[in-house]
Length: 334
Image (cartoon, rainbow, N blue to C red; front, side, top):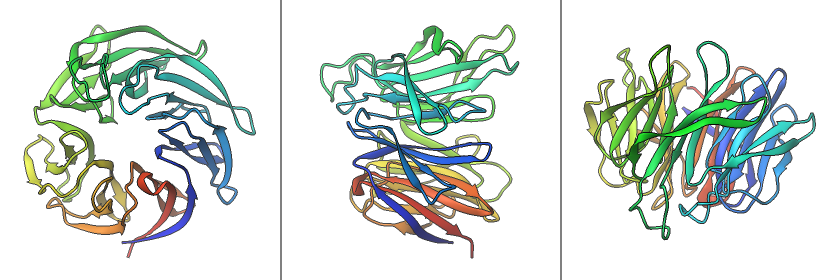
């Protein structure tokens, strides 16, 4: 597998990323976690850059509103994790750039999502706070919550917002799955199932291993998805587990500040992609359930990565945070 860096741009502390496509319009969006810009790059026009917002930043999560070029994003998640002023905004595409509406204040919300309801009547809202309150950045004595409700796009509000009867310490990971979400923290890995019929929200514990981030892919080609998890808050371990969360292999502690994670099909099989923000700050392709790896890039310290396809080609978008670099790599299967 070859990775050729075909595009790069400078963005200080680049963090949140998203592919934003609707109809024949196609962008990648990258936002900073500091008081810096959010940029959209036009994939149909040689990565022409548009400023979505200039200087607010503090963005941890961005979520496309289905069927539109509009999206929701967190802002003001700073300084560090002491983010009482965090808010969610809606960015509405006007044909040229984006107009902003403030949805509301959502203190300490690190990851959030909107999930289409099964009956097509709207969206569920899920928000995971990294803490409930803090005296300072290193204070974890008041654990976070899992907030749920309903997102109303017409009124641009989150309605019926309430917290589940559960406290989650140091939430970092969130992964939308098919009909449910995976949420991680010190207490382990949890499956969150939205209401169906008479059934309310369900939260089911899948693992009690402290977990920072999670992704799934059939890395060993056995017909079942495996899970790659960053273990411990921001690492330093990697673990591959089977579909029942039984450990296949666990790394030595050589990936400090593990952060970027993705899994899925490249070419004719599944892989994982992983990167960490301290030490070697490498970005790697994981090729087996024994954590064999191929170097993609070094000394870039990626915060988030995603893979997208366009016109028959496959690309890797990486927010290379420690290098202050937005990067796109063309992936060539050999």
